[in-house]
Length: 424
Image 1 (cartoon, rainbow, N blue to C red):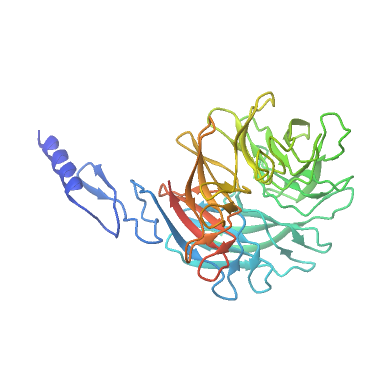
Image 2 (cartoon, rainbow, N blue to C red):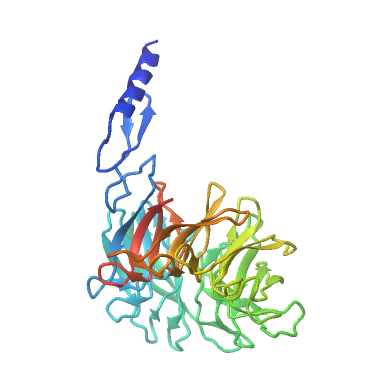
């Protein structure tokens, strides 16, 4: 009986309190023996671990406000122990991009400024990957002795990020890949896998394996794209995206060109390099995909293309993993109530898909949209208001506080891009 009244008191207290521990709406939860209140959702915060996110959008940080800071963000973030890590394509000491961290209160630290040349990378387009050793790994599209890009490492020790340096320089030519635009994923064999946009026998790009943990660095292409229209099933060319994998370790990706119509493909590839073309785009049903795929809760693949569709402004699509069933779920129109040209990946929230478009919306500078798996699309946020972000390339990630976080390539106080916080 005493425990019942204690619970009743806690419940009533939560209902009466209008705020606890911060600005905005706070979340309350019942804990045995007392009242537990989550941090408030004030301004650009979100680090308080709110148990009840509210529909909102806020700029967490406007980037490029000083010479050492990154600018022009085009990659999604990753979060480790409450801190976000990312890359910028521009900015930094040499204006060749950075690796940075940003806290949930918007404090930015530049971990490394790329300077190019023979010993460093330059211009990272992809985000970071957390390895099984707890460290961060990423790629740059340029830099190195041949200018063909790199793979690099950032050590994370007790919450402190330290630049470890470049661990591999791409050589290009027929025996290696060149210029990786996509990031890395780690296989069950501890090796990392990724794509290069160029290089290989035909200079149409590769899928490669690289071992970075537990020994000597070893890298080699496991698949070389042909791009030729006459190849059976029409192989792809110029992959811009990284890979995803299923529970069995089979990987999936897209190419921005090639295929029977020359406008891109979806493929699966095993760790041994066995590759199957699952979809050849035909312009009307989508063209030129840049984003990584999403493996949905229903077992289907979901993705976006930057062009094609009924208006030529891109589509969001679904595809079965065997390639037999394809649906162009939505053709973007670019109107004020819709976006256009989606470059970013999709995320799934309670069986609803969310993504970003680079253009379209009220200000023609991009949107966040929702999409049902049956094809009902809704613009849920339009970028471009004063001091807002603009032109997002990257999709969203889920933060530990239940909010979603993303980046924009432009907009913000200095027009150099933003890190933002969102809840639909």
